[in-house]
Amino acid sequence: MRFMPPSFPVSFPVSPPGTIPILIAPNPILKAKAKPVAKADDGAVRELAAKMLASMYLAPGIGLAAPQVGQSLRLIVIDLMPDNKPAPITLINPEILSLAEELATREEGCLSLPGQYAEVTRPARCKVRYLDLTGARHEIEADGLLNACLQHEIDHLDGVLFVDRLSALKRNIIMRRLAKEQRQKREDDRRR
Ligand SMILES: [Zn+2]
Image (cartoon, rainbow, N blue to C red):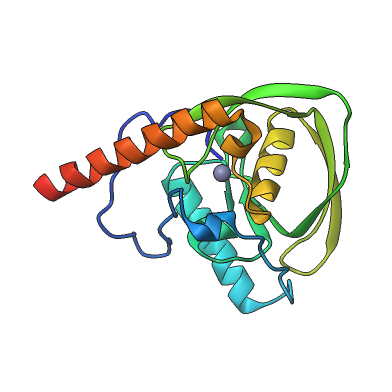
């Protein structure tokens, strides 16, 4: 998830070491329901989470789900950088236990829809259960930015993008604009 436009355009022809390229919508992996992680306390899972965090910081973003880097697994990383200091959370097999009836609207963006932002309305609070990288179980209750971020990232695990929470009209406008901008970017990259 991304909230603020980057201050300068970043473009890497190849991914820097330790990062994974982020898929851009539309892509069938982004629309698929991801599979649970079989074993949380596992070297491959730890390695994937570390690469996802590196890719997220580079982008830059505040949340990233494994399907966005081509891995159809129920794994997300989040870092809201409180006080501008890194505070990463890795959530394995996250499950929403409850959602508030009250709604809240916030501007959202997504690393898989670069440059696109829209106001999204979601339940104002959520309670989520997940496993950490040691396999320990946690529960968190969130409101505000963390709430929106958790729901946005867990949506990714079910093949749902923030534009799917908008009207068909708004979604079509954004998807067309994204396709046009991506086409333009590819042409610009070719000319370089
Ligand atoms: Zn996203």
